[in-house]
Image 1 (cartoon, rainbow, N blue to C red):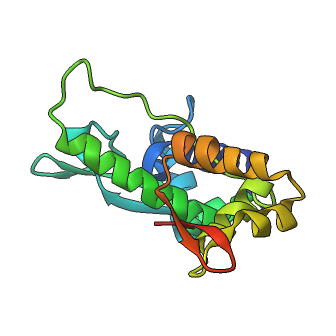
Image 2 (image 1 turned 180 degrees about the horizontal axis):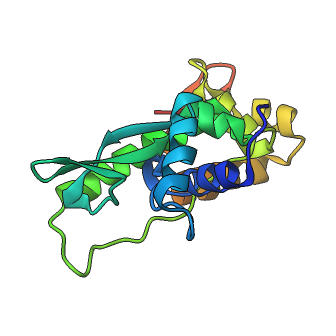
Length: 188
């Protein structure tokens, strides 16, 4: 794991908890030349990426490019991996966030449907990260396979799929009955 400064760790940790791995706004007290230097080093290391900001969605700007356009910063998979979030889990959560953000952007913004994004971060080596990796395989995973890997009871594995992954993380998980394996779950 690469050696990160405290500032870099804070920026990447906050990005991991925001929709779309958005690294903006930067921590309080980090501005001007110090912010530019920290962000430039993180972009050079491949931990942050500068992308076009969705001004209609209200994304904070990193810098303006003119003509009412600007850029914002997002944490890359390498950046999330640098703080211990597995890239497999990060990409699953990132794609789920992008889908949610697109659905929210398509809806007409009113005061009733403005949702505050929930912080989402998955630490490497956790059982949740192991289960996400199992569900991302082309063959998916049955409850028995999840129980073998985690050592949990079957009802606990089903509870994590339904409550932790579907409801809290917003992952699209499908279930198909297969001969000899029972219900097989996959991230769609």
